[in-house]
Length: 356
Image 1 (cartoon, helix red, strand yellow):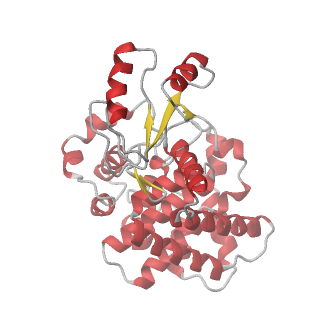
Image 2 (cartoon, rainbow, N blue to C red):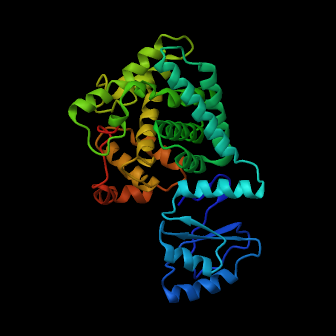
Image 3 (cartoon, rainbow, N blue to C red):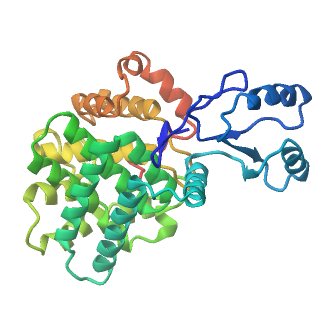
């Protein structure tokens, strides 16, 4: 569960806990066929503030659970499983019913998504990108994250967008947070944000069945994916207004320090600082996002993978640490046992070399 979403704090409690006095709504997700649980639930609900909305989570199509929930006085039910997407839909519905204004975070995410939609459409039509619109959107993202924090940004993006835009918005949010947390100059923050928004524009011409494939890509499919950095670079390099640092980050965001990346197999000092930062954020974004074939990894799991890559010489460890601090997580405990964490992830993990 996210800790915050669309302007609301999210807290997970057991029925042995007391309901916070400031709770706006509670979602009850328990075994409604267990008599002991029902008895405990009755005591739990008595402690709810008088204006607190009580919502029951039930299995879709389970008429017995539906009947039990109604018997217990449920005025509203939602379907399991509970995740950030389901919570976002519920929050928006509750906002509408109570006449509350829309979330500022949701507005910023939707504005950014519209900019990306227009930008990708221009690429597909071989028309120049509106760089002013991209820069303006980047500033809005940076300002939003400064206000609400990167964790709420990530939760909101995952709740709203399940496409390539989700990845781009997550990566851009991570890049903004990273840059701000280490005190980068405003001009460099803007460069990094623009690079984040444009880094995957070359994926426009890659078939969706390859990008969304639920499993390992074939060598032929991966060769197609590997074309996207150069395709994006060639298209954008024809326009004036993008700095060399931004263009380089778009072209080389899949390069690794050990020379095993693509498209040019660069290594060490051949890779620019801005590009190194975007690479770390890009991999973290791929791990944190929800895809058709996997749920999002936690920040701790994702950091463990990045630290293992740093140990192998692919990424700069100091950048991984800095990103961990930007996400307000203590990386020291992960550093102690990264290999054990990776073993637990092995069935789900796609190596970054295989990640679209």
